[in-house]
Length: 219
Image (cartoon, rainbow, N blue to C red):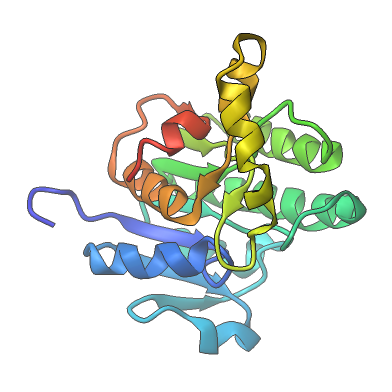
């Protein structure tokens, strides 16, 4: 890692869509990672990560394992979000981020990294509302944080949005659509994971928010 400071990272959602790509890369870069997972997910644990068996919805099952960490990466979320999953967003996404923030505060986490969503955005109002509440919980906690706001992350199993790429390209050329198209533009899994690595490895100061244009800067 050269002169790069090694991070002590506690991660939730490491076996999911983003986490399964991010965790191995962080290990490769020399960071130390503790991963919160269910017993049934042990077989999916990325190599080089320390398993912490617990429930992301119940702070008391994992909070002690946060002790000694300096960075908390919150990736828990309902898979394949859709308007039909509003109840799950409330019961999983929101409950888990509140539990994670509480644990992070209790044990003095210096940097909280959270994947939110671009907003306001068309449709998915319930999902956006829950992520906004997650952002509020982080902000009110006083923790220095990096919040990333992709709209849709293209990658394996998440390819339907490729058909909209021509629309985004056209919209970016149209003055009255340009700003919205850039803010709600698509990012790739490669760009998203690299943005997360960049976020983790750089000081957030008091806090920062990265929209799709900033996420796409990570090659």
